[in-house]
Image (cartoon, rainbow, N blue to C red; front, side, top):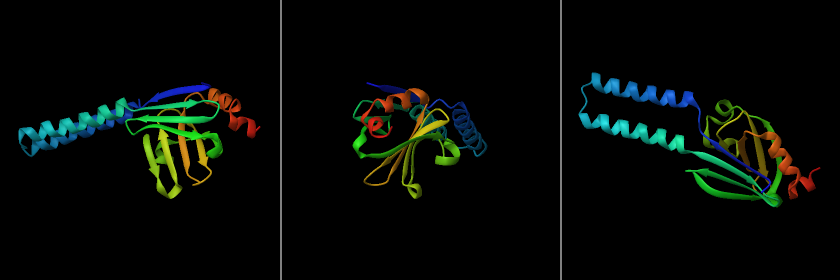
Length: 158
């Protein structure tokens, strides 16, 4: 294996926002004198969302022939052979402005799927057949680029 990186969704403002929304919702329910099990249901929904987001992880692996992406709990291993990749470009990303936030994002008007977890840099893989773009966030850009030079893709694109 030439490169492996695992990223987790650890963005404190996101969890502060969710906790604030939960508190506001419960506060409004207290004012409106809601039935007790409504509190329980709302709390279970918010807790489930927080646990789902907190357990999310993106794993990127590069071997000589392909790049493998895995994003728990959204999808398992997706393998992209270098023969089906038209280009790979490393660039700055702004998760909120470019893709609408963190996590697994589908941007249909850009023909893009984005796996954004950590970092302000990312790589865009453009697939040959469909012109679809796959954007992945990166923490260790230098190691990613070094691994690419040692692959089939790197030997074709000096």
